[in-house]
Image (cartoon, rainbow, N blue to C red; front, side, top):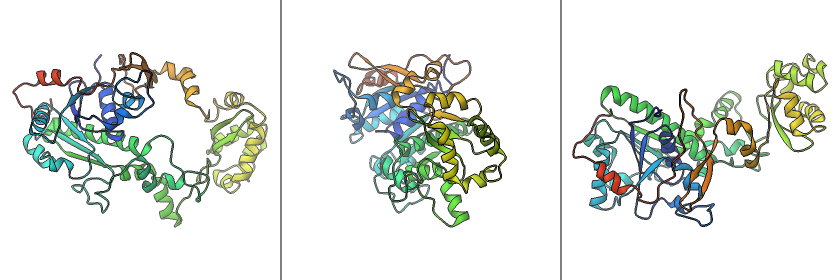
Length: 392
């Protein structure tokens, strides 16, 4: 059964992670994503880890460029720009993550393309956004995930304490902006289908990470104090964190009084469910160290598996998984959340599957990321002489 975006054509000029992850989300829903790369290719093709033999790209590129077709076009040349324009005449969406002004210098600005293709949705993902939607004083600066995490608030509340800020392991400074860009693109496509007029969609890494960190702003507004890192506990909810076990650690979330009463009962301290020193979240927050001490007094006498078995049906609880644990979890198999994708080496790479599911969907296997320019001849052959300016 075709995915919900079948028939949507996306021209993808993005590289590395934020842009490719955004267009991967669209490709996973059956959009025809045509990845247009310069002759030297997306720099991420070179990044590992690599299979042996390495093939044309590593796992990094394989993961976020699956289900796309690949075309080479040198936008610094007339021929390359002409090819891109012919593609855009048949497209619904353009996505790019160049620095401010790059597309303008190519003669491919939003204004130029909007005049040529009024129905085209044009999306950009930049470190500090595009001046068209708000002229940041940082607009010209380059940025990566770690910069967005640092400036957008995530790093300032992650780690053991204020003296040791820490980035989040996954690239949330790229991936969350990518997800927001996909939402914005689909909203603009819906509008363009009705009006025939496309929009410019702009997402800044900094803005998106701030949106992800929303809690810190209302806390600061109300309390006058900037939140700081405090390890695995939560500044507003208790208990809501990680506790040690005899074999490792588990995450427990029992901020509601009902969940706390259940946790106290299972831990052999039912009286604490009604004890005024612990019965409310506010009371527990005032005694955070004592609360976690009570919970760990019970959990450290048991394995992580025993703690999860005792709690998970009554109190939100889960083990701290490694990648190996995730791959072995039956949930992952049942939900098709780790899938193989073919690799040019002749082997296969396991990658994360589609997180968005649809009823009635029987999604086929993932198609491998394209070789550099693999589909150039095919895509050029598909291009007709007609111009499509309004999405179907």
